[in-house]
Length: 599
Image (cartoon, rainbow, N blue to C red; front, top):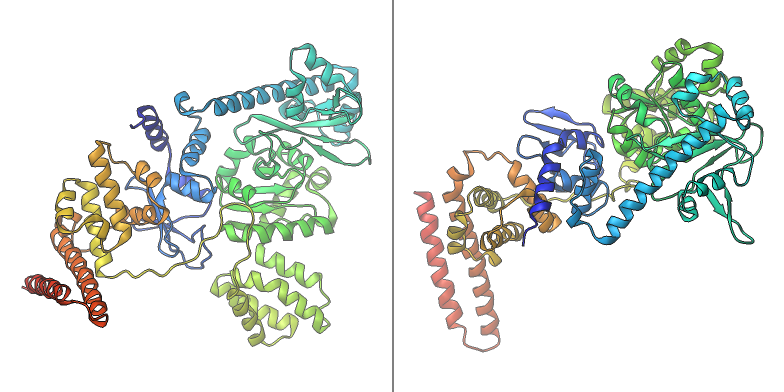
């Protein structure tokens, strides 16, 4: 039986979703005619073969690797989750609650736990903020913030706080308020003692920076020391609601500015983000003391297609930038590097030179290719052959990713700088491009481009399937000609059998139902079929001719089967006349049909 509540939920999520917005948050789209195109996020390519058709229910299809489907199928592939999980994921982003009857007791319990944890983290934010501004405990924190030019307005705006240098201030306060100790442990606000019973506060003697997810829900903290103690930063541990790989500090408050400006400035630390944002540059976020990830890139690209890396300009910051650039290469994002001079971080630079000087730095941000070449040349002794070889090896991936005209210019520049023959450089580029793309561990697994035969039978089958989708009454005619189990193109047979089952069961046909029920290859083919514009007319106009072509193809397959069987029987010395007679009958029918086609 169909679940009416679930169907209504899926319809509501689909109606509230925009496939162009969802897809463009992962890859940049360009409109050509009625479709939008991009380099496929599921396999490596240089020429766009990935298309999105928004006006036909919202479908995508890649003509290279043949991935295809609706908005939920796209999310399931890009996030590496099931189709049903993709629907739930999109619903959560839109704030649409899941029907209770679709949730197991375990899911309901998990949802309640998440809600409880978020509530406790909000309480902790208020606790630390009050300790900073309303108690004597906060005096060292206020002095530290004042020394960095952070006043009351910024403290209140970012809900900055202070964790007293005590083992149990937060623990005792929350236990008195009825918060279970187990929940404090699960939130990472306290830790279990290594010896003896009980717990103690995780954060002590640190200024506290609350961390929210992109929807503004507080999920964790970053605690910073006020001296040279280590660790300099202490983040909340990984929990059900806190995952550093998928969080960017400040994104909840920077989203609008990022969309307005068309790019985001990514800095290394919380204090950099707070300083830059407080100075008036609002399109800034920070990673949470961890390496930049594919998830971070995809999160940013939901709001803007361009990322300005502004890590510290010391050696560690430059290395972090190079690592991040190698990760982001596969996402299709436009990237520049904002260089802060004199080895300073953005916070120091703004405090010394002002926000206008920082904005000028942003205007002079280097294209990623220029930065990576500059870095490679600066970090290798190009007076030696080994140095030249190492520099070229570091630069080749940049050249391979560049557009043709840009690549030609860069090759000429390297030829002059390294005094290396142009042929050697182009040979290295060709060798690199022939190698398998680097395996990105985060995010969706890479697919392979597949060459499929797109012959007359395949094209005719698409017309037949499209007509059956639009008018299921056509199924009876199709099955009278060709058994669905023996359909010439197996993918088309699978789709038609799904439609026939829906008809038998009295179930309404829907894209979401089809994409969830069909195999991945059949779902991809259906996406192409539903988004295709047929040369020569509509599916209804072309149906009779195409159905006849499918019937002839089916007969030819049967003919070959009988001939093979007759040959086997003859070689075995057995009676093969029956198979031969059947072959002759089928051949006669084929000849008759083909003569009619030609008339």
